[in-house]
Image 1 (cartoon, rainbow, N blue to C red):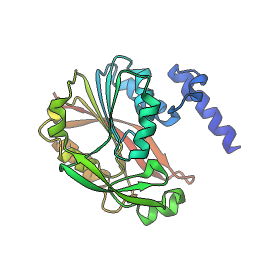
Image 2 (cartoon, rainbow, N blue to C red):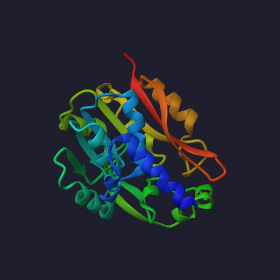
Image 3 (cartoon, rainbow, N blue to C red):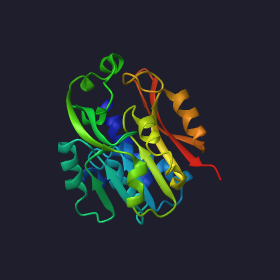
Image 4 (cartoon, rainbow, N blue to C red):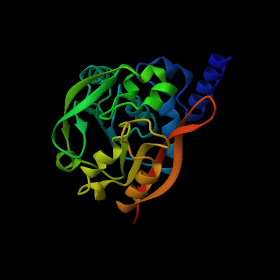
Length: 245
């Protein structure tokens, strides 16, 4: 019954988004990213540049091309093996540009946990709570990856407004923003995932992140996605902000 329910939900999401069920057969296509961007589209009718930080295999970028077909997308993924899949999945999409490094508050190298469940990979260690709730995230390999600050990087990328900065870096969002304080005036919309419980050791939770981005000059628009347990406890939520005028 659970599988039937998930298939029914997938059909509903893709029908509402206009993507069509055949899209599910394409590599890199994601139900979660399609739903997330379908919700974002309600609040952001137009985006011309997307900074896709924590791109994984290109799920968000490929979904974004459906909702914002004229956008230039810059996707950042630090894990070499995952980056190879990102390159493969987006190779025929000229609007998507890929980069094999992390973003953070410093430039150099970064100790990184390449999780065997790649969606959980992070510069932070998976907490014992997450391992209990999501056992598939328990195993990871520690590697070293290159890292850059957005303040140094963004001048090299031609952006066209409106600009959406999407962060899906598993508890490392604040560090990315610390490295972007001088260029955030170029960001029109901010989309990031935040936790209500400690999913990663040392990660800032919702209150801290919400107050921090408000101090940076953004105002809250709406929640556009969430992760919850089978008992309906909300663990994480995707939040959308816009720069104050």
